[in-house]
Length: 414
Figure 1 (tube, one colour):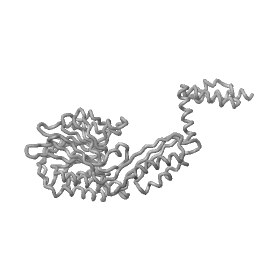
Figure 2 (cartoon, helix red, strand yellow):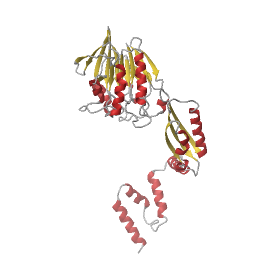
Figure 3 (cartoon, one colour):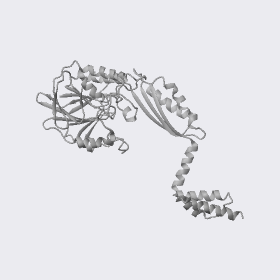
Figure 4 (cartoon, one colour):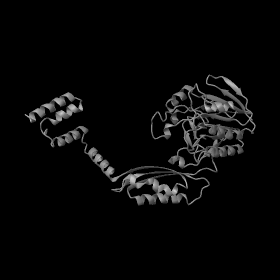
């Protein structure tokens, strides 16, 4: 069979802004191109909506998208199997669209989510910890779908379901979660599933959620990051890859990425300065943007700039007025920026702290030295044992400190 694969359309994204039509504009192009490939069915890997309670505008976008597949007749026999092993035949008249819900659509089990509504409307077949058997003649493709859940419980949900490939079938496992191998942190609130946790024996492993497209060879098999059809956050890795969709052939097991033809281009730039002047920052900014606009764009490009480093002595970050430096380019692109400059005075303080750290002076001894220095300016100079007082303070013996200081004061004022 030939399968079209895409994910993360985010209907309803950027509503009320200049980008409010981007989600539909780019996802429609992807689906239209997939349909021209004469695929047998379409597989979606979650986050069709940008919110778990879509607005009317988001619903309208989704209806426009799914109606594209309605005129195409279905050539497959469909049967769904739930986690208890119970099977149910599904009557489907148009080209099947099979989808899991993503983390954006997740709702607690007692609430209906957006994809359940779409299934009732006849737009797609929704899977969550279920299998869908798709038959075409003698060939059977089984899609094992685990919808998006909160990241902290994702690994446990995967282990509880424990999907196994069906014999004599082409098995595709699809989910929608963060993967620890692709994140800089091991925080369980951000991700609990790693590539090593994926079930073995599947012909293709598919994951939505992460917005850049890539194919990885893993111990569990071929692993596909679908990427998204729209950019919701401009990150370096995402800016390096265009938006698109995939065509998968179950016979050759070949995956082909296709770029969406008309889409907003993305640019990401990190600039780091040392003892910079306002003029040197302005010059570097202008060179970057002049390089971008040597070409023309049908749609305003997305540009993300991160600036940081140190400024020359006397120039404070506020005086830099970065918004003013970027102002000449704001009309030509959809611009976002972040700054993290340190002034010379802050740089000096950081250097002093580093020097203190290198001297290996403990917090206690450093505090004691400061206390002795301050006492030299008072009548209490040498009136009591500084080391003992500091030790009491360290362990919370406030009463002893007060008693010692009171006694010292009496002795110094007979």
